[in-house]
Amino acid sequence: MKNQLSNAGLRDDLMSNEDLRTESDELITALVKSLNEKSLDNLESSEFDYVIEILSGISISRAKQGFSPRETGVFIMSLKEALLEVLQEEIKNSVELYDTMLKISRLFDSFSIIAFETYIKGREEVILRQTDEITEISTPVIRVWDGILALPIIGTLDSARTQVVMESLLTEIVESGSSVAILDISGVPTVDSLVAQHLLKTVSATRLMGAECIISGIRPEIAQTIVHLGIDLSGIVTKASLASALVFAFAKMKLEVRKVQAR
Image 1: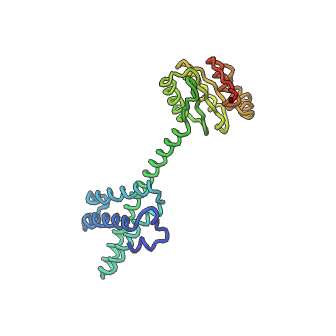
Image 2: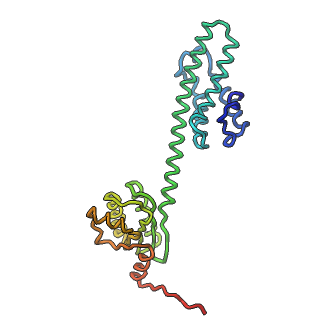
Image 3: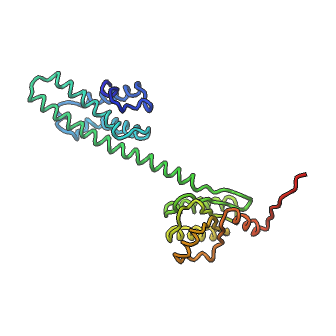
């Protein structure tokens, strides 16, 4: 605890000293039970399984809490330093001291690698979860009118995201019984041949569900790119803005929106 608390990078905003002490006590208790001459000579000993389980749990927890790899490593290295200090006090024979310190160092190097690998897995889980959440947020299907859906696309379209877009849109078409779907690409930074192919696939899938698909948000630079790439969108209704697409959708459904004079 002294070694950890003296570290300048201690994150007391993410973990209280009491929680840190609890984790340290749990790890030390498990380590003391597993350490003996036989296990110390065999880093793969099953006696370390519980220690590794605790270390892995701590590493994953810290990865999800926002600790850095260095801050997680300090937790393990603090215990290593404390053990080496105790060994220097307890063992007077220099040969025995060197041999024991070498074994302890190798053991904790192994623990550090395991903790780091587990930390990386924890961070990957966090990143994947955040990616899924961002994808869901960035592909909302909005019911703008009875029978009319709008799906504003923000960011670059790739194969995985196109699949999410199609699934969200087709599911909403079935649930709402809508006959018009507007894909607004105002938030798509660039359109290349791959993005255009993804859009065409989405339009085709929408038509198979019996709904008309309109692409809105065609900016001048995007129009020039599409023409330059020779992409044929002649069979698809395209509009410069979402407002224009809505006007077209209203006309297709024989709806009229009029201003009413206030009385």
